Length: 218
Image (tube, rainbow, N blue to C red; front, side):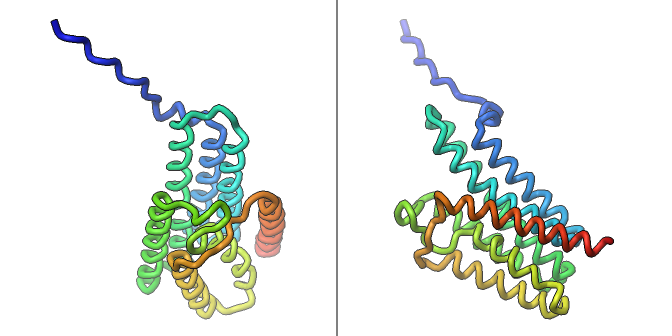
């Protein structure tokens, strides 16, 4: 008489994680990033910037929410970490690459830069998923979300410079970013009260870019 096979542990379904509040927040950030990509392709760069700013805000918020919730399972924590990392590729890798291509009017000259942005983002996130932080408050290399936060500020000056010159500036700036993303320099992890600074920054720049859009179309 053969012994019955041991029962396999219950495996949760994919959609069972969708109701987890931190994951809902992560997906809201993904929606903002996708909207940003959409408007970047259309050439509406102020709205694209607004979208990615809110993507950063939701990216920060999901971690804060996850740390505040007690009783989350190991599966929920692992799934949330993977989801967050994959969304970061879209928000901070694909978005700036599409933004650069669109601002460069999809010239072939901008393709190498777009590829390097996505490649560097993928390499950095893969490395981070294996090795994590240097310590609780220190990254190795510049975190990817900083790229778009700086880009959002720099792009405020776009209207004062010719399109050709600003295209070169944008290209060079994004290439500098990816060097710092991959260089093993120590950079701080902004946590705690910095989230409120990010909220103010996001709201203020949203208002400014909203005013730019208003003046452009009225």
